[in-house]
Image 1 (cartoon, one colour):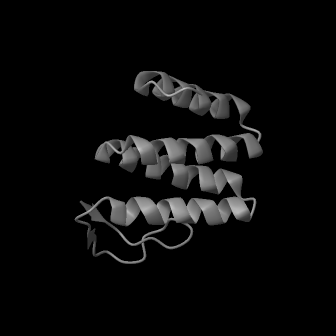
Image 2: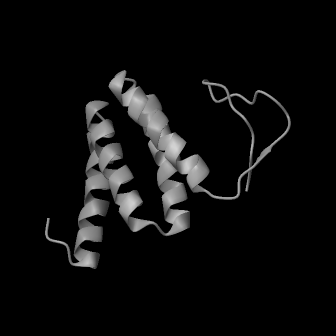
Length: 104
């Protein structure tokens, strides 16, 4: 996987891509950035980072990390007053609980 380096506004800072061999090298920093943005009450920006991290967790097949990210994402969306999207994320979590036989 190749990625470009981005500044805080998401704009490329150079033309040379970075070679990434483990998707976790990207997923965890995305989660950390989202968490910091939530602490700063920048919910819309944080939501974008959570979405990207969730995609990577899905690629990895890491259901536990995906669940953690979806929970944080749903709460973030609720704080951003995006209640319909938040509800959708909680519904996906409920489906996962049922699929894995976990009581809610």
